[in-house]
Amino acid sequence: MSSRRDARRNHERLLREARRLFAERGIDAPLDELAARAGVGAGTVYRHFPNRDALVREIYDTAVAELHDLAPEILGAETGWRSVELYVERLGAWVADSPYLPAVMRRVAELDPTHRPGVEFEPLVEGLIARAQAEGALRADVTAVDLGILVDMLGSLGQYGGEYLPFWRRQLTIVLDGLRARPGTTPMPVPGQAFAAFHDMSHAKGPKPAPR
Amino acid sequence: MSSRRDARRNHERLLREARRLFAERGIDAPLDELAARAGVGAGTVYRHFPNRDALVREIYDTAVAELHDLAPEILGAETGWRSVELYVERLGAWVADSPYLPAVMRRVAELDPTHRPGVEFEPLVEGLIARAQAEGALRADVTAVDLGILVDMLGSLGQYGGEYLPFWRRQLTIVLDGLRARPGTTPMPVPGQAFAAFHDMSHAKGPKPAPR
DNA sequence: TATGATTCGGAGGGCCGTCTCCGTTTACCC
DNA sequence: GGGTAAACGGAGACGGCCCTCCGAATCATA
Image (cartoon, rainbow over all chains, first blue to last red; front, side, top):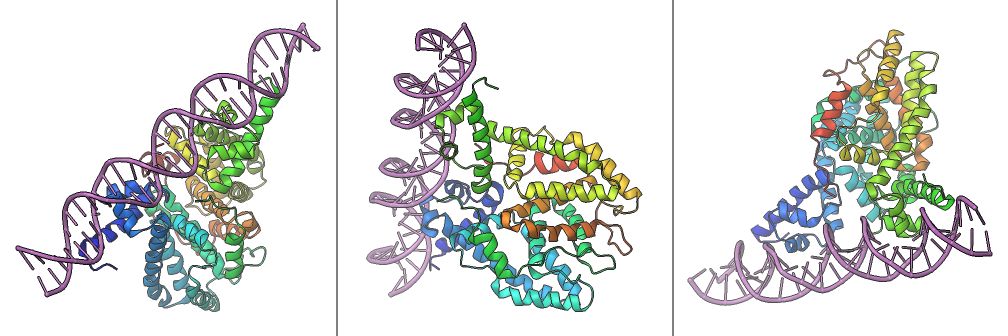
């Protein structure tokens, strides 16, 4: 972190505008455009972020920090089921109105395939699920990975733009109802995956990313 | 359609390789790469498709044709509920294992915002839903638009690659259970949208696409 | 097999985005 | 205020991709 105020200000500005730009035009939007939006010269962009990947990486880091901020409320709910609700709703909404997030996550995973985002949260989520299942409120065959994937699914609706967000809760309702333990629940096919197995499957041998 | 056999062969090959390439590297992958994969000169690509959009458009057309092929089985099911199940499952799976589809759809919508893909199916889907609701099997507050969005959601899981497809049915199970009419179902918030309203909202005033 | 029309191949022009370089400006410290 | 180190700005070199052009190759026809 620089000691000069203008440098800090520009850094902030670039990050903020980058999130907006990436949301609007995708993660490969021209960085000259970023410079223009931030009211800054092209050189300044590259002084702060040696290349696009560094920028993506820093956006990723701020996102992880936001995640940490969400944790206490979710984990501190009165019942396990309420925690599940909050988990799916808060994270889903957070992804849905940050349309740049999925692309950023994917890119970071490409850059560093060994890095598993959110490992530190895994035991917490496992515990949260166990609690809700012990209450008999959450269907017994659902795993932490399933829940994470449902959040991704809900988050993908961010593609429809901000005006869609109010309607987004409709799909949320359906998913949550599907998660509830009830008589007549359809058993889930094939066994669920562990975090590590899912991670390896979706990254290690996925389609090769475009070389950059 | 040309009368020369080599021309037809190259056209097929280009379409096939384009789908694979777009699936792996995204819809903006270099067309020179497409030429290389198809074992063809760059000039040949542009003889068959004057530009990238023409290529995207033709992929879109073949996708719509595939959709038409799916219709009879879905609509011909014995019960309305079974039709709903088949609709969500078949279309969801179809999108999920064609990772290029969402981007292609989006691009076509950008190219021609007046064009509403699948209008001809709308009354069919409405009827299908009415039938399942009349049976008391499908929750009463769900709309055709909701169902389409759920298919998109499920389809977005194609991002995890082909190895994920078997596990995909787990999320499908949850969504279908969430769609069932049952005592204790959570009412859906905010009224649902009509097809046209949803289309206008998600295209007409969405974030401006990158100029090309 | 000969002929003519059609398609193919791939080198290269032009454009656009990335990133560097360095003269100019700004902020901090005394 | 003066001095110095750090940051800024933007022109332009560079590279990659889109698309064109035209001589070479291939196909349909007789």
